Picture 1: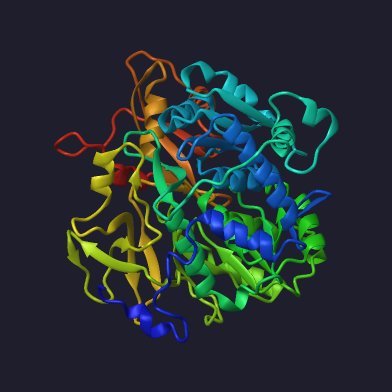
Picture 2: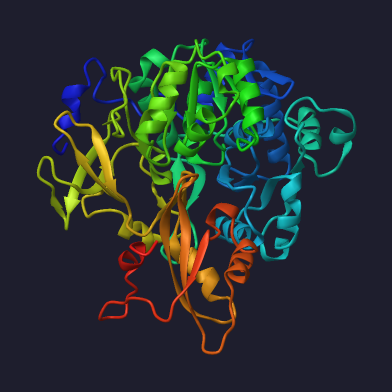
Length: 536
């Protein structure tokens, strides 16, 4: 292992974990559903599912998929907010041996078409409100089976929904009468395609295996034993489950220990979220800085009883110290930051249980994770920054059907290049001092300038453009686009934004459009985004 200054700060935490503690994620789910059968597993609105309910319903969905021709390794796209149907579908897909493709339900037709076509998904589980998006591009995909999901689906919804062809409820009802034969699964089998930004303006699918997720669950459980008491945890999940952080930590890890999980479909409804907090009185909560900032500023925050809250975790973007301080004033506990990426399942580092105050760092690398900080291929000296490069059982196998991108993503000795710049302090705590210089973080979501630029440049009247991040109090960063109009073209900021809104998810749409005569470029013609950042 490369220099590992963090191990001296581990205390009683073991340096390694067994990534094969479960043969597959299906085995992990089976154990949890058996051991915690009578405990509440999932809550949404007025509906509660026990672990036994989830076992039965997910088995029914797995049987339906098999009957519909879904084989081991086939891709099934899931385009849902945080509804009961999401975990039921997920566990059913896992039990059937298929590969889940996680899709943002707010995607535009262009974004959805790319993800479905690239993954080759032939089955789509989609929130009924997003059906028009799919209808607009279905002719350009391989999708043959579409299951629409209503807000109430995922439980024992009988009657009209169960009788409606093409509904998720009907699939569950049909599966109940069908046989199911569990396929043989192992750690090397594909599990998720988790799409992330690409250098061409189109997202790439990070291929995550059963072992990747089993390892990351075991890494987090080993790292945070004081917050992982089987059968006693209550977690509120407001971050979207199609995002890898909530998927791995909130859903899969807490499910593995028999936690009670309250699902929040719309985290932007802070009044509704506060109502859930009041009812759940959680022991754990995960959020991004913008969500914490919104909560601490809410006039009703004082109505919540935080006496059971032991763990508040943050990821996706840096937690602002003043936000953590305000959160601690209200709840009595600080926010523990972590760090990870879609390609790493995602957790690479976290502030462990032994930390008793806000550190302003992303904590220590989790067990069995090797980290090197590289400058032009040379390992940085202690205290110096370098690109964070990692090895570990949680690191992806590569990008789906993109061998060149996969090769470029790894060093010659097999370390994944994160593109982020970090520095270790003397105790081994990792601080992110810069990131992939072009990436923009909007409310914890990655926005890649190439994608925005491809959309804007396609607009009539645009000669060229460049996209950078700008500071924003609400979302951390926002998108700022600099546009060079074509000769004699008449453009407006409103028109450019409207064009983007039709092509991009809301968080990717530019907040500001500036018109310029020329863009700064290097001697070889490369646009110098760093010079534009000074103007944002």
